[in-house]
Length: 535
Image 1: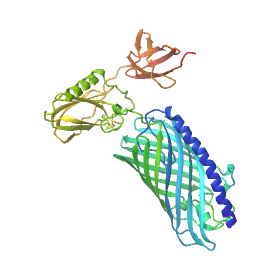
Image 2 (image 1 turned 90 degrees about the horizontal axis):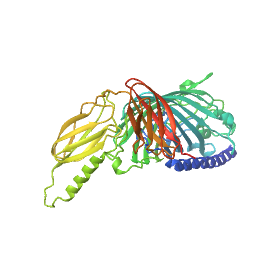
Image 3 (image 1 turned 45 degrees about the horizontal axis):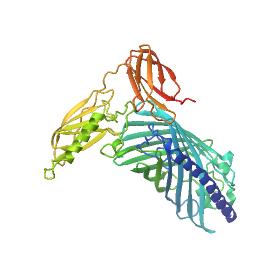
Image 4 (image 1 turned 180 degrees about the vertical axis):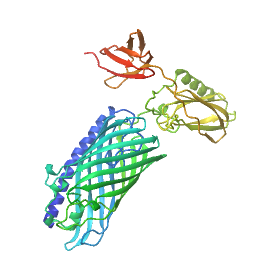
């Protein structure tokens, strides 16, 4: 029995080293891709220990953020007495994962998870088990409305018994459907339903050569499973807090359903830095424990309680300057239908003049009492409006900011007294109100929701090269003979009558493109173009 123990541990060390090389290669790929991913890393729930966004066992679908990330997690697990030997089992748990998301529809992660479990003494003395397994996860999905997203998850476990090969007959696959609902920017609900095609028991060693501790530690199973789960997450700045229920319901002939693994989990995630996320997780297993005698089937036995701490490093994320942020230090991100409006030259000149005037004030002049204006901008459905331009003006003071992802803005140093606040954003009627600013205090009241404006037919688009850089191209739209140029951000828009149009896009040094678009009544046709250079 001890001979097998020694061989088993040696295999685990070799197998772990081999997969760590693969994981390191994935990390290198993430670092190399930093320049290729967009600067819009999602600041929502955050990335879990498996490298993708979600709770502990239930994934959620994210917005159009793209990222590369690597994460590490470690912790402790407690398991009460199981089997004929009395005494608790104690585990040191760890995992590592690298993930990549270059498309809004596709994410992939490669990970390694394992543990060292210390068992109570049996007739042969002290005992411990080392276990580790690599896994690959692929996720795809998209948003069908502003609040709902649907997608799927594929997870492949690669168990092995003799290095360096993998026992292909034991490869286990999870197939799950995912649904995500985000009623507000500070709350989300995710659901999972799927099936596990579990063949892990094919990698089981000879039970006669195992001690009870090894039998308890190995997460092998003789049955397929129906996978279910529900995760709820909400934000209390600067934290995201989540709680989750998940279950792997054993199915098959004579399946002992009452021993199906079930668990409750909760966690906290904190974005310490634009590139660094810290997280803490607590998981408790529910339900009775199966028997572990020689003739009993293989059923996974998870720690009764486990706690873990981890860190995720995100590559290709925020590279914005201070001018790209609002007064909360958050990146002013745009909503699903909004296009960011750059600050006008007139506003920049006005701010520059204001700074010059302030610099010339004599030192003896009294400092004016100031306060802060803050509010959250929502639409008529109560959803936040991101990227809206907010102008606060009062007694020679003018400042422009943009609302963050949750629709919030905050403007400090506003002179005491009446201040006029004006909010503008495409597709909505302007919103304006007067705030009574008091020295040393924050004006924070609920403001009316913004109302959508009537939108005529329009062609709108973005012209870029294959490196993702904007191109100031010339656009000709026929019939009608409309001619216009994309701005320095590569953006253009044209009001048209409903109908079918030919759009010609030309730029010096690039191949010409011709597109045909059909525009309906009171609708906007989006035309995004990637130009290729001439050879």
